[in-house]
Length: 298
Image (cartoon, rainbow, N blue to C red; front, side, top):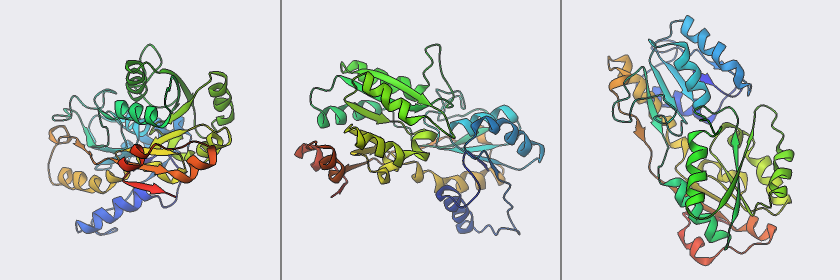
């Protein structure tokens, strides 16, 4: 497994190990885990991927775009099963969701409609919204000539279609200068903040929420980051993808080719409204938005 973070038990690793156990794999008898940890220093991923390839492992499991990109560059022969990849087609990991075509496949929580829906939610939360900050990660793959990766372009374009001006701010693990980013948001007169489902936004979600609350800036996090304490969290959840990883690995170990295994798309969406945070920063959440919530935090 190729992991952005550090050694130790993580929800993703726990879910994957449990999934293999449920499929009848016994660690030390039927399966052995070779894990490499970037410890937040994503520039280490290429070398770590090369290590796994040199070990001639049967399958490489990756979590996130940077680790998947590193694994694909390291080997064209060893099968790769990915999760936490926003748009595997747009970044070139697979030819299509239906027929990946190469040595990589997996599960994505990418929802093509999510960007537009996020803008609708932010406009409901902030009537008259005109300026929105978007916080992203400098290390996610797929940036075009504009410097924006697919997930960033998708949200910026959805905002533009609704007449909302965006400022995309990128920071880098392991020590992002979040205070400087918030200073830039304030200088741009941002009325709200969208935190993308990228490594820095997940690892530092609670600190981001704290800084936003201190500046009374309404936030929208990804659904998997509801525990951060932002006003809203919405979308599909990456943790719904983890239990499916062992299923893909099992099929590959039994002879299936990754290029023939369709990428699975998680489509269940959640909307969490944190009324406590909203009160603390002095905004009123519209009743219609509260009614849409799958869960509220009082």
